[in-house]
Amino acid sequence: MDQECEGILFCTDFSDDANFAFLHAVDMCRKYDARLHLMHVVISLNAHSENSANYDALDPDTPKVNHLKEQIVDKIKSRLKRQYEARLSEIKGYQFAVRFGSADAQTIQYARENNIEMIVLGVVGRAGIHKGKMLKTAANVSRYAHCEVVTIGVSR
Amino acid sequence: MTQNLNTLMELSFRTVLDSLPCYVVVVDKEFNLLYANQTLTGVFGDAAEKTCHMYLKNLSEPCNSCLVAETIADKKIHLGEGVLRLPDQSEQRIINCTSPLLDILGNVMAVIKIAFNIDQIKNVQQELIFLGESIALLSHDIKNILEGLQGGAYVVDEGIKDNDMKLARKGWHVVRKNISDISRVTQNILFSAKKREPEIKYVRPGRVAKDVYNLYREKAELMGIQLIHEINWKFPTVKMDPVSISRMLGNLVWNAIEACDRNQKKITGVVHIRTDYYSRDQFMFEVEDNGMGMEDATCDNLFKDFFSNKGNAGTGLGLVVVDRIVKQHRGRIDILTRPGVGSLFRVIFNIA
Image 1 (spheres, rainbow over the protein chains, first blue to last red):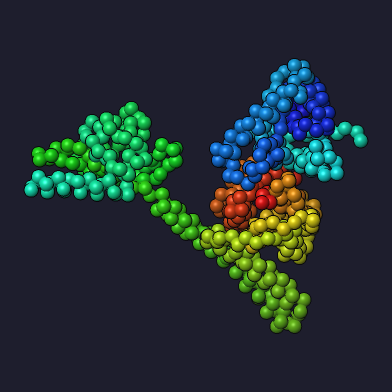
Image 2: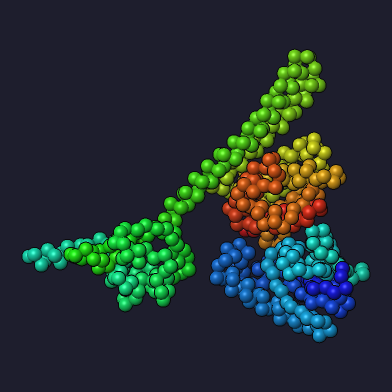
């Protein structure tokens, strides 16, 4: 990677590994004088809805679903700010992003769209090592991303 | 009595115009609306004291190519196609027809404009174009496959003539391969050209995946490609059309096998078929290969009719069929790919 870097993408599901990876992402941003993109991918709308409606089964373009998505984006951006703000003043610049869909596909797509030069993510997600979900996400992102991918895990 | 007759005729004409299933306006030489029928006012609202371009297009000036202006200028009937944007932002494709209303001296007093919604006609036209292109392109592919069949049959004949079973078997393999190729092509034609209502049943996704695996295992082996299935057999039954889903998965698996076959790196091709939970309310099918992978430009065009990156070998219908089936089942497709590394196609459906 060049000495200067346009953008580093940090993907989080707010797990311990992700929070640990964040520290490394900040270090990378300082080292390469890069802008940090903090992103969370919403895999299921149902997990965020307060009633029992099956939003995932609805047409994604209905006003009901769009309204829920807007609320989710606001909620998550607030959470990203709350959780990571303390260290963000150390770096050149940052922006928050919220996407909907599969974590690996959206991460790769976002990286392509925004000319990201490095992706930083945790190895194991909220589902835990036994579920293997984040492992798969990290593995797929490492395999298919167009740029460097750094996966960080808490020692176990 | 004459006055009553005139009133009756006027009322009847107005009723007729209001009842027409098309849009009718009468416009004066300054483009002011003199009349708009009920079919139109029912959509766009009251037309009083508005110009035609303001009422229909929210423009302060007449449209660039205005048929009304042309009719006013040359006193002739004009026809044209266009798109009408409705107040709810939906669009209708229309045919416009303008005709002059002349006074006793032959001067244009006003122009009557009639517009017909031709969305349905355009859809049928598109289907016919697609069908025509299908026939042209696929007949070429079928011709190639038939030539392969002829070649295989010739080798079988020679083997039988010379009592050489080994040669005959070699020819028979070629014949079988081409029979299954032609079967796959015609199945895809049927799926893409004909509307088929899904037959929903309770089915285990693992069963569907295993059947597709069994269908392609031998073929993949012959091509030197490893086909592996990773199925969560604890997954319960879900509602789906097993025939369509098998076709969808089959097309993805065949594409993956071909991608490995075309990979010039000469490594052992491996194709994985997976099915499992995706989230609490969703399940997925995944097909992953270590073949050629795809460039971004290829990825963008993947689901367009007849797009194929397989040169003469591809009909371009396989992924169109996949896309259609996924949409029928209200699912979505993720594509992860990298040139020289491989591709992963993931199809996600809701469990309920």
